[in-house]
Length: 298
Image 1 (cartoon, helix red, strand yellow):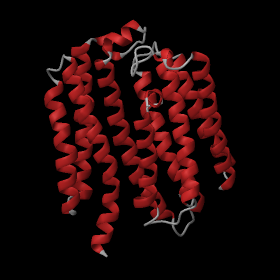
Image 2 (tube, one colour; image 1 turned 30 degrees about the horizontal axis):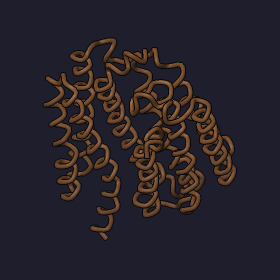
Image 3 (cartoon, helix red, strand yellow; image 1 turned 60 degrees about the vertical axis):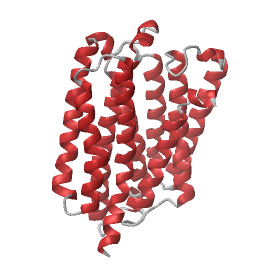
Image 4 (cartoon, one colour; image 1 turned 90 degrees about the vertical axis):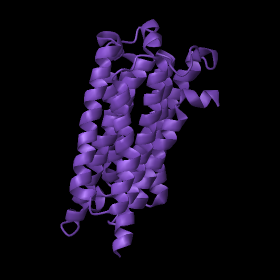
C-alpha cells in the first residue's frame, strides 16, 4: 500500500471515476457517442497512467507523502516505472486517436506527459506554475472525454446538443480546476517546512502563510460566486439540485472561507484539506444531477 501512495492512487482512482461518471450520466443519456465502455476504459487507463507517472516522479523529486521515498523504491526503479507508465498512457492515446480517425489527438497525451515531467523536474522554482499546471492537466484529462467520445460524432444535426455538453463540461473543468488550484495552495501551506527543506519554491515560502491565506481566500470567494451564479441561473428550478449544491458544496465553501482567514497551524490546513476533498467529491457527483433532472421530467 505504501508503494501505491507514491502514485497518489486515491487521486488516480478519483480521476477514473470522474471520466466514467461523465460518460454514464452526461454523454450517453443525451448524445450520440463514439466510444463504447471498453474504449472509455482505455481512455481512463491512459489518463490515469500519465497521472500516476507524474505523481511518482513528483514524490521522488520533492517528497511529501513520505519523508524518504527512496527507502521504498530506488531512484532507478522509480524512473523505469515512470517511463513505463508514460509509454502505456501515450501508446493507448495513439491507439484511441487512430481508432476514432483523429490521429492528431495523440498530441494531447504527448503534451500531458511532457508537462508532468517538466512540472516535477524543472518547475520547482516557480511558485505559481505548479498549482496552475496541476489545474491545467486536470482540465486536459476531462476535456479528453469530450474530444474522444463526442467530437468525432459531431454533425450539423446534433451540434447544438454536442456543444451544449461541451459548455457544461467547460463549467465543471473551470470549477474543479479552481478547487484543485486552491487545494494545491493549501497543501503548500501544510507542507511549508518540508518544501523549504527540499528547496521547492511555493507561494507560501514566497509570500508567507498570512498573505497566502489571503490568496486562498480570494480564489475561494471567486469560486463560490461562480457556483452561486450557476445555481441561481441554471439550477434553481430543480429543487434536488438546489438543496444538493447548497448543502454539500456552498456551505462547506463558506466554512472554508470562515476558517482560512485566521489559519496558521497545521491542524487548520488539515481541516481545509478535508473540506476541499469533500467539496471536490460532491462537485463531481453533481454531474449526475443533469440525468436526475431529465428522469424527473420524463
